[in-house]
Length: 501
Image (tube, helix red, strand yellow):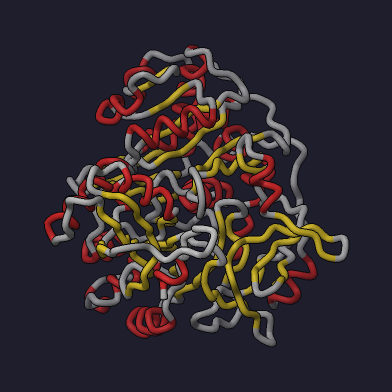
């Protein structure tokens, strides 16, 4: 079928109730492979759907034993280890709302998320337990020990389509991170991008390299692949191009998903020296893939590389597909079932839509600010500027706000600025995104020093290390420039566009 035929035939089929644990994990044959986990020390474990179901029942029992019930929030701050899947599925089984977080977060980051969400529980590691000191919640820092003696008698909660089931914190251009809250209908609907973009089938092994706190980890490591019956590879180790390619070859990965930054590094290797015969599809999202990267990857491997676009608020909405001609540099065309429009140059998604978030947790005004109406139709404004060609392909042209996208991470400038202001030498600061060939953008900070301090390379390095300590390390400014003053308008508002130019 052509893209047009698929759009015309598509109908959302959202069930009135949906519990991911019961309706997906428990539904597959118990012996079917679900997860291959490995790390950079050579360890490996394999789990069937039956084992995941069994272990997630134990996690559900542990959560209930700690007093957590349907609707309660629970931080899940774990690295790429199998306990992450167990914890996520265990939460969903009993209706506890997981808040996935990368384990690079600082104690300050954790406190905000706990207090803002009203989280009553947290699942983490002993190494990260101190970040929860002084917070009033039930802390589980050794999940293996807790589930060892737990019962498997754990009935699944009834979860209705509009019930909140997950919260992802994402950076905003102003203020603190936003708690993007998704309903059960979204977890169900996200399978369609795995069916149409990833082209996943039960025989596939998919590897998505996203971090555990990203919404893309949910859709491309958990909800999407397992809804299609595909197994996933989950690797815990630092990025190394040769090791990435070696794992693709030795584990016989069939579908590979990574950020554009990774593909920029991978094409520098001798791709023909790795046996990628099992790999049939590569995909990328989170930042635009340069057309030259697409051409070089495909020329060296013969494997398609399909770029796509999504947001934490909506997940994957504009995609390239295996069944559609690809235009390098294009985000693709809207997912069947998604009605998109370009309003004043900005990509907008027509509402209602089952993939759309319920809203920002406890912030109705902030939620409403992202919507607009045209001719009686309500839209969600994505904040991303695009252009549309005569065939309906969309091309990304930058952010309408000040969000910085670096190697797939979204970074709010104020988070960097607030961290810098905690240093005794800093009087004022401004952070902007600067184009970078490898990472897409990097954070650049402009700093006004207090009297008595002088800018130097040593002080710049000290400020970088300071930011790494105060907030998540990936947010630190890779460039620091000392200036006498920051550009502002007549009312004193910072003009970041002047700094970007």
